[in-house]
Image 1: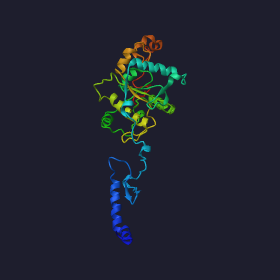
Image 2 (image 1 turned 180 degrees about the horizontal axis):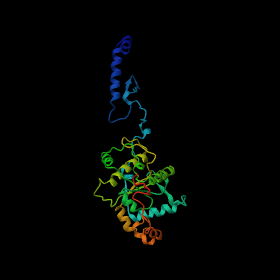
Image 3 (image 1 turned 60 degrees about the vertical axis):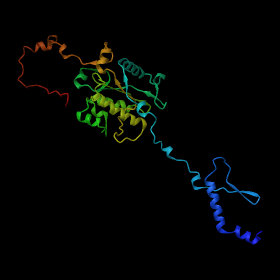
Length: 304
């Protein structure tokens, strides 16, 4: 039987209220595993509920890292990996590209990339890394001869591929001009596939110039395809926008398959022409020959 004054003093005591608040906070921060109701206590006859917002339970704004799309697409190295192509498949590509020049808007010319985005595939770029003399004797039609110096081959194997430009390694001037026109004429809606081959494309000799160039172009075109920055390769305007292929069996396999020479360009044999067949040369036999070195015209060498 306490007086009303003592009851008022006890209820207004700062120490008791602090203790009660501390007790309530501790119960609120540790919810009971068996019930999900908010913490409450009886004050007189009416229940009084107290909800406390803990700093750890405050809602956080959603992360905005997703908008930067810093993750590369799934299986980026596998979906654009270089693929083999057989001589019959290459011949079919050459036939299709030559017939499509007159009807480029045909439905058969529509292709789809890894993002299901349609594009048009123009003539493939054929890269022949054989010796220049072998290339001039016989080569596949519309192919380009590329020669990689030994120093650059060693550098590319170590991953140093800064300022790589394919046009600078094309051996013939007419080939360089034709390659630049071919790449620059194609708009962003056209993709140029690259097909690389040497004499045999030996799969056991991965350090050959052909396989080295294949790895370089594969990484360069991957970098262009995903529009991601690369520390080793700088984007160039002459970088094709397509997929890299390698000719299975190399040039020898294609020549053995194309026995009719439908897609081969062969240099004429100069020894096949006889001097006896030319009457003007026979008339000159009886004339006095000029002195040594007189009236000679210097010819430009192959490497001038």
